[in-house]
Image (cartoon, one colour):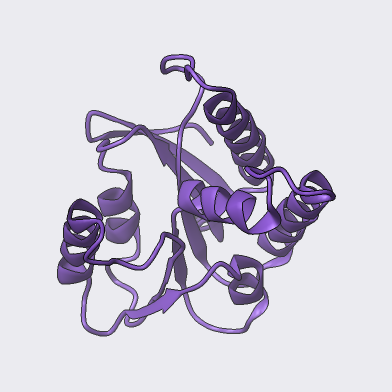
Length: 183
């Protein structure tokens, strides 16, 4: 009897900036007829032409059958029925969520709102019945941020990555474009 290896339902793809993690995640879903591409970053604007170019490059390399969903409600996407989804990326989701929760100001209750948002995302990730791949920046092997807000973001992202990885069926790390399966 030949046992086939079960294809991962939830995968986390980690890597540093420009490591090839998004392209690798896209390749993992290349055979899917349709994919919900969940874009968590800020929408492109004329105020940031470099970001607008990056977004345009990402869009250009995706098949026309893939649907772009620009949202911070990643938990809602994970809970919704549907085919495969690619979340790109948890780093931008966290940065925008920290901003929405008032962490940077700081507003009263901001930490509680952030904790609730992260808990909700992790619960939805854990319960999702969709095939889903999440991309995130690996933290911890780079330089220590010079600012308190940079260290706070690094720490929050490290915790989020660890929680998502713990509930993932597969975890990948990309370095210099080379994938290494961790789980």
